[in-house]
Image (cartoon, rainbow, N blue to C red; front, side, top):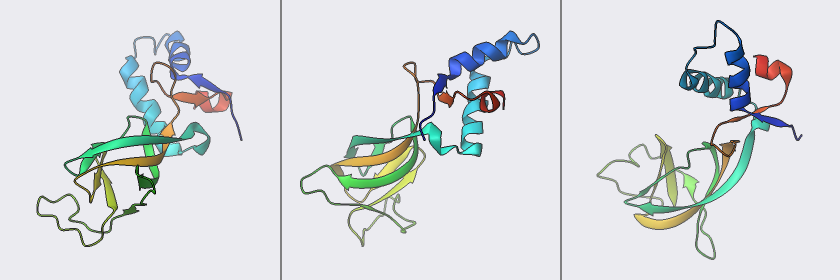
Length: 145
């Protein structure tokens, strides 16, 4: 279901109209809004995106709007599909890979079993405006919450 969205900036402007909240820092409102999104987990607010990442030293930084991974594959033709690892030592300096083409996500970084490569990821992203601020469903009950 498609929903209309409004920028977090519009919501912040509304919040700051209240005399008791007028001095609330922008960063504080942003932090609480993102926490609220994660807590409620409303799927309509997420977009599915594709991105090609360059892996160096077994790792690549995930996009800043990353929420959840859908799928990972090599950026080669034909593509090779990666699976999420069950190896708890995947990020260890003394790594040995029993299964090739695996990945692990930790701290905004994707770790792969390949030292250097390009991968394409399909992921869920938080919808953002042109300034990089989260977009919210344009629903009175939601924005009041």
